[in-house]
Amino acid sequence: MRHEARGEPIWVAGCMSGTSLDGVDVALVHTDGVEIIAFGDSHFRAYAPAEQALLRAALGTWDAPAQTVELIETAHAEALSCLTEPFDLIGFHGQTFNHDPDNGRTYQAGDGAVLAEVMGVPVVWDFRSADVEMGGQGAPLAPFYHHALARHIRATSPVVFLNMGGVGNLTWVDPAVADPAAQGALVAFDTGPANAPVNDLMQARRGKPYDAGGALAAQGTPDMAIVAQGLEHSYFLKMPPKSLDRNDFNDVLTAVDDLSDADAAATLTAFAAACVARAMEHCPAPPTAVYVCGGGRHNATLMAMLAAGIDCTVEAVEAVGLDGDMLEAQAFAYLAARAKRGLPTSAPSTTGVAAAIGGGRVSKPSG
Ligand SMILES: Nc1ncnc2c1ncn2[C@@H]1O[C@H](COP(=O)(O)OP(=O)(O)OP(=O)(O)O)[C@@H](O)[C@H]1O
Ligand SMILES: CC(=O)N[C@H]1[C@@H]2OC[C@@H](O2)[C@@H](O)[C@@H]1O[C@H](C)C(=O)O
Image (cartoon, rainbow, N blue to C red):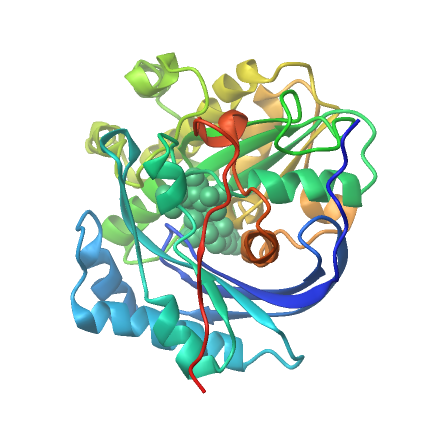
């Protein structure tokens, strides 16, 4: 079986500013882009309410105002400056404001060349464009990192990594297939909305950013007719690979308009879990475990609903010694190390791209 060639490990800082618009995660990984050697320091830099409002205003646009782009770059520089250990490379995802791969477009705001200048360190950025240009979905991109993680935790049979961020995405990994780009190694796709609809509801009705611990949802009763209606969306008829824009399911949010706050939160939480249960049908073989990362794993109501709908162990990635809040930032550190070595970052099985391809542009600081 083909293994990827090892290289010289470097310390890479990965950055993620996700669809939930809560802030910037940065995390250090020591890697050659094939193996994970070690994890390092990490930091979360929250967006203040006024900053979040600026970001929210740019959702759905293809050209964010200069002030908004500058905010993204500055927030990343601030987050990176809080890391207490040195690094040789930065993986900068940027902030997704729009995603329409079927029409060849995806938009992550933030200029890597500016960040490279400010930090004095080379930056790999614009990870998704090359994949979209080659007919891929441009997302999800974490699956190659999930493959490395499955090997890192010494999984011997298929496992699933499930990210419950603003949007959900799932990767089924067969660790027995050594090359992540090989057929049979990975199946990956976005599951559906995860926390974004509940966050939007909490913001609109309670002035809060999210349903802490799932406490409000726990007090309500899900309207299963609305959940069933949501599952009629044409997205669920598509075979993977497939990806979503944060606002693709806005109709589901309006369907809960007449419900009480608690019942609405319960319904949107149940819908997020039902999307994952439906997604599990695409696994080529039953996994031994589903490891959950992303902020949704802090929501006990969501975790209970996920466990009820999935026929294997469902647990937070902390169960296998990983950091579920930093996993996506780590992914972009790992992908940057791969891009630097010219290794692929996506494949037909992860994004539907025509052939395995390396994404990301490199910007070096001048002088
Ligand atoms: N204590 C908590 N209780 C309930 N939900 C929480 C808690 N902490 C975080 N969350 C949820 O997790 C979200 C943040 O998750 P995460 O940082 O994984 O998303 P993201 O990276 O922005 O999104 P994506 O993965 O879609 O890009 C919050 O907006 C909130 O909905
Ligand atoms: C276009 C875009 O930014 N998509 C994000 C989003 O957030 C979760 C899900 O939708 C996933 O497809 C992706 O992020 C993760 C990090 C990924 O690319 O794997």
